[in-house]
Length: 557
Ligand SMILES: [Zn+2]
Image (cartoon, protein in one colour):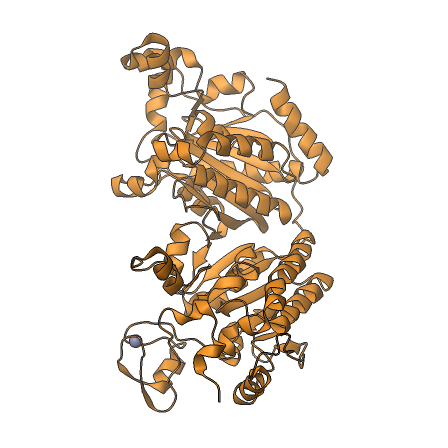
């Protein structure tokens, strides 16, 4: 006889364990409501009362995300060994094999998702809480290796109590083995999409689950390294509500998005599509002509400063919406926090996948608070860099929209290395191996702006500004009187026109009269045309030419 607890790992002991009810009527084990089993099944295995996500088995998961009948299973029949000669382990495995019809806790293979072939691995919690022993590690590794060879993306649905205790140190080694295989897959320029489901814990979190280029999670999923019960016992305190839930991880910058089950297939398909190798559509040759701006005469620098700060000016996301299609936001720095002052992700520009990164001020007071008035923290710059390195891996051009009064100035920002984060971006952007375009759309405030503007070209909207410091700050430092900002603006040479003349920017984008969110057609058309030309020019350069050009662009100052 086996005691049930012998076969679940430490991490899994904490928290509620919702199971799909069997039979006609069952109780949801979270809200205790009586629910019709058929309703649960039809609703994507979600409790119709409390919206709790039930665990789903492999077969259901495959049906939910893949094109019908497209699944082909790989590497069946690997033998589970018993390296510790753990009493009763073989019998337990045999019993589970019979009960579940699975050979082990992960199923691997290939599927088509909206016509795109991908390698896939799905953990099944019915099998010793999908803990990772040798066979699980081996199947994941073989799947990743085969995907590398066949140039396929990898999708892994993680759900695990962690490393399998019954196989001891051999289980621990699976963490290194799977990570190493994923490194090779990544170095081959291939996409790895990790989907975290309830629960993803321990050695699985600390290996393949957290290594996705893109990490999605199901709502409410428990995700962590140490289990909540273990942490509570260690620190002798109760953990706050929502601790280690998917929403907590999103806020702390560790996952890109939380995706509802019903949206999962379409979201995955969209991400796969944006990462497909495709021929870049032919773009007309760069005309190289100087752009004449129809600037209105006698507009003072101070008036431009005020224009650049107007509340009804389009913000980063307005440009993203206007110029690109299929934008999908990716969040988090994978380190500390998600910073809403910077918005980033992947989108298409006229059939070309691009990475877009925008400083976002928000449209009204409430939004401005959420976006910290467009003043990024170190984690915002680190997220931007993460997305740029991802763009480099997948050969996507990067388009940045600059609009910040400056990097956030505060105690926490200093503690987490604001200066280091900005410096790191300058360093890495200087030799990013893909074209980079930065467009100043409002305020280009100091180092906080430059950290997104080490680009092949920098453009400015006619009424945007770009400067070493705000005019108020300039007047305050040099004249000890911030009220002389207007006068400072007059001598700082911070207007688009000034900066074009000084060769700090390549293009000035003329604004229509009363340019605003509601009225950005003309600017949009101009930008579209110019971005096309930009891509035509820089995508045809070799990596060496591109980096040399960018180096010289800044070397000349
Ligand atoms: Zn419920």
